[in-house]
Length: 278
Image (cartoon, rainbow, N blue to C red; front, side, top):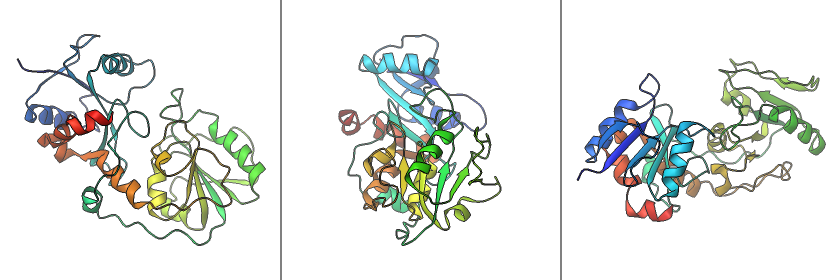
């Protein structure tokens, strides 16, 4: 009997719907849109971000609790929009993206350079996200103001706030000593002279680490937990751990669209090795 397979991903521009359908078929499955709230326990369920209370969250969590295979997709960590983050029952520190201790082969194909740690820097760069109510994945709407208030108790360094360019929400408080970055200013420009980057759990953190800028995070679930403890206490002297193992693992937690379409992504995520790690 063919194993059931259900997909709950939008069929529209920006989502790898066609690649997911092709890859599941290449893996020997027959993917169909989700039409029932309780999938067959044998089914492979593929969803996009399972926002709390949404259909993907309700169905996926219940399916995983029954021992079903649930693969969560989101925008990739490294290498641009051609890559998709893929994990079992979660991503970005929530659920299991991949076993640890991965080899360097996948990271090396990205041709990304890990630059030396910065020897000096002045300002603190606070990175905003879109914001929302599901704090497993995105910052609380009042987080930028609260974290700046906390930073002001910890340091006298200049602070630059960078809102998400596509949703440039202003700060709620009038911080006369905080500079809000123009949306046209690049991350590379903002990283210049940065002592540290502070995020909730933005994927900008990975790019900052590649550039040699230490990162502090404030989310309960974050891929950065493999490198750092949560919190801001180390602001003045942030750790500078070995980033190589972190990036090797992170590269295994995402797949290119071509790998998805070929079925290779599912061969890996549904393997016994990854299943046991979850």
